Amino acid sequence: MSEIKSAIELAMEKTKGLGMGEEERELFARKDVENKVRAILRRYQEGMIDDYGVKKELNNIDGDENLKAGALFNALIEEFDVTGDNKKIFSLFHLTGCGLDERPGVELEALQENFSREMEKRRTVIAARIDDKLRARGITGSGIEPNIEEWDEWKETLDEVACAFGERVDEWKKRLAEAVNKGSER
Image (tube, rainbow, N blue to C red; front, side, top):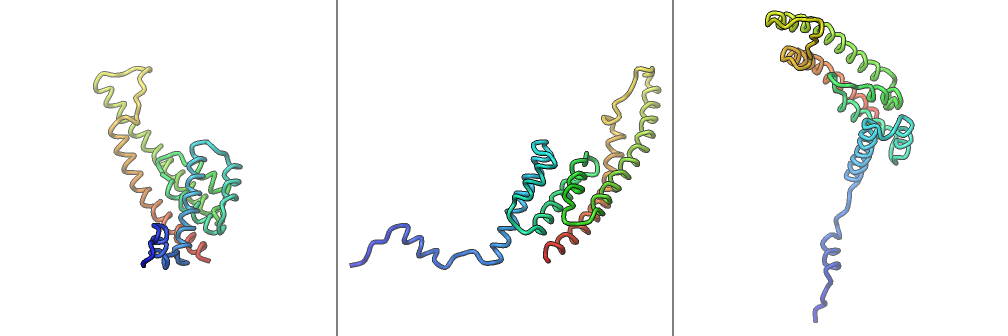
């Protein structure tokens, strides 16, 4: 007579030769570290943890230090937006170093400062144009202060400058991501 097998025995027979290879294990470990680092970064940016909490939680992640530094660096450069407030990103660059020297954070800050200076120059020009438009419509007075950010001229200029700086930031991100990835392969 034939033997009746349970569902578990059948499933075990079918999956007998299946298992994770070395490459799959490494990929799984890398993804796990990346997800944990991104969760820490998200909590930091939302103000749920402070600088000390970031360092503590990063140290509590099991895994290769280069892998953690690379994951943090990649997460930070993905979050960087030249038009946004990047103080927390700069803070983390300086706090952790991301396994690199000080140069990346300093370069990013310089890009941000250049963008801010360019936008301030253009803000002055656009404010004068808007003031002229309002005067032409008979809207004048010391109490009139237009919300420049809501005018199409400002939005177009912001998009134009952000696009130009975005290309420079993308080049920077690519160059440094390659450097970090080379460092984490060692």
